[in-house]
Amino acid sequence: MTLRRRLAFVTFTICTACSSPTPPTAPAVVVQSLQVGGSGTLDAGESRQLSALAVRSDGSSSDVTTAATWQSSAPSIVSVSAAGRITAVAEGTADISATYNGVRGSIPAAVRPSCSVSVSPATASFTAFGGTAGATVTVDSPSCRWSVRSDAPWWPFRFEPSASGSGTFTYTVPPNSTTSPRTATLVVETSTARAASLTIGQDRPLGCSYVTQPDELTFTAAGGTGQFNVITTPGDCQWNLINGLESLGVTITSGFSGTGNRLVRYSVQAHTRNVDADGYLEIAGLSGVNPNGRHHVVILKR
Image (cartoon, rainbow, N blue to C red; front, side):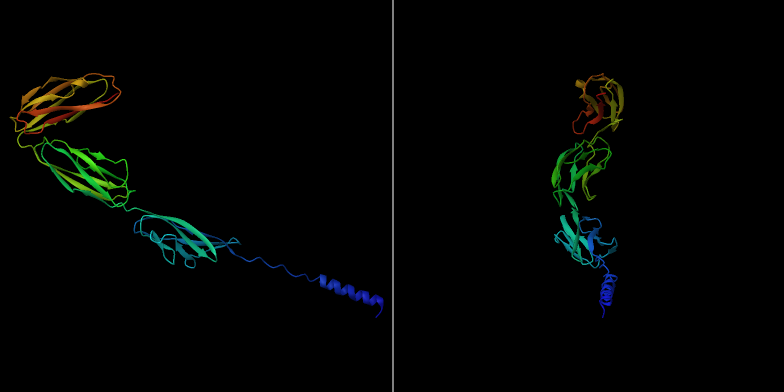
């Protein structure tokens, strides 16, 4: 073979090799993150389904809830099934995780207290003179908050403790100067709408009843005049008026005493106090065996 033909053969071989490059290898698609979805806040005994979403390196995603491996950091507080369903077991917090193809995602879970509540005693009885008593409130968690309210229009009682958890409260039942026995319910309510109740019963007066109508009047700092009717049952009950508001500038102008029904008039002096004030004008029977009727006077600071 001549030298020229040998060179041509070598050149052809080299160029043939250069014209057939190896194609590049495509990168593998992998799971980059696992997103766990669903609310992790539960009430005691509640169950809820979570979800797991696998996000891949090519931008695609798919639901892998049933394919993932689920785990709870505190099964005694929040348990989780193989399908990602969580159940509240006890008050507290836990971390719920899902793992798929070696990638892990998680969500915090919290169980709120049920705040079941009871009150002791459940009933109480009072004479017509009323009185002061106490009750114990028991809740199932130190984080439970509760409050007390009366359901009776004649007794606007409300109480809210400064701290959460079980505790006690004291209440005062006002005198009953009406002609009939009466009842009220103290409703103890928790922040989770659980409730317990204390039923109050109160006797009617033994003899005379003294009722004031209206039973309350409110005045501004400018003062003014007021009046109320005294209504007695029976109609021959005798009474005297007791003014407990003289120090606040309240003066009786008529109706100092009487027998049966009568009108009481009074005046309220203008003042410059920087606080609201209140008190009672009382209708007292002569025997002392029945509660006084009471007319409430409220004097505002402005």
